[in-house]
Image (cartoon, rainbow, N blue to C red):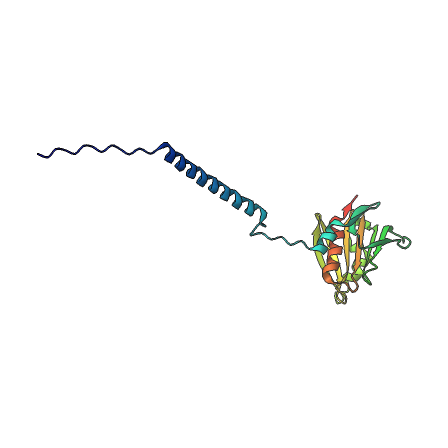
Length: 201
């Protein structure tokens, strides 16, 4: 019978070869970590995707550059583009008046008059009744501003001219705005700013 072959001795890796393998593995891990870190840094420097917010410069200025008025009966705000001027003398029944004009836009003005309202009923106000009785010239819109009902009368012949009637107890505020040659968007922004900021004292 043939003699069985002698078992071959197992090959063992030299310590030098093991060190080389460990070095390459460490280098691979290091490169992977560096690559991930590079991707994270690039993603942080890129603008966010999916949501784009456009800041309107004019709207931003209107919302930031506001002036406050503290009157006897109410407080409100108005855009700094309007210049406050001295109103005329108080008439019978008037409590206080405010008048503003815009030198950059011809015909743009804001006039506010707070006057007595007998019985606290809007129908008792003569200026409101005059417009109410002339629907061929004025359209009425009713809004809720800061929890209170506000009636806005707009002149059909000039959509930039409107008056807001805001009754409060025995008083009423008449906020009259004339837009002149300005755009409807600009006029509405000023008008809305005053109404939304109005607070009775």
